Length: 354
Image (tube, rainbow, N blue to C red):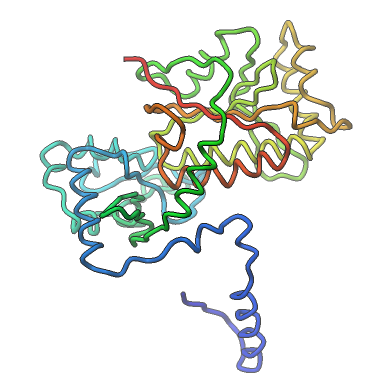
């Protein structure tokens, strides 16, 4: 790590003391204790084997263990599109590995090498200059891959391989396996149906479900909106829905549950605006839905509500069987926050109709 700072030699001692104190700080353990369970893999033989294993999977269009994500925290609101070599004629709304491999074509995909992944660029155009494409990263640096080799577990992050301990994997799986399967009846997804269309179809199947997708009130003082949920049930299920296939969406899904839950409990202005949104919908049974959202003077009882994560993805069994490790890790972090607020927690995956 490199620190660049504009200072004088007289101030250097104080800065070094602050850095030493920060280095000894352990506040990160509250939310990121898993970091201590990662160790960088420096053995070139193991790294080479992991890279080759990953590439062989990608050659066969197998993305069950690998996906793409931005390695830097760019503002999604400012991004117009992505381009990825050698498919520069295609513009991508997201870093979607499945779409990228499909656009590459079978011939080029089967000839894929690690060196190509390290050389090929990912370009971004921003809203402020939509015709100006700038290279941001290599494809390799955008890959997040989880691999097993000789009974050990590894993850590729920002171009480097790390080994994570068996103990943290067991801890994460135990937490995720302890989350109840969604008690509310869901519907399967149809091929080509968007997430928004799925939410509308789900809400439309029962008068006990209310579509709140994209209804985003802005809490007092907040620079951005907080979406309460996609669908609300009359039994107080706060339902959040996301597709597994797109990069970064699962982390957004799990964060949405904890952020909206905390805002719902702690921000009276948020509840007032949420109630107003329901009024603006001009529902015939408006009163029954307003009853579920206390006014700004009344703090809701989280124990009466259930946060439900719904992932549109293939898979069966408990979530630990069909979620990638880092998604499970993210779920554990936000799931703990949801439970600490007092909410019940459930999860389900929705398969697609053939």
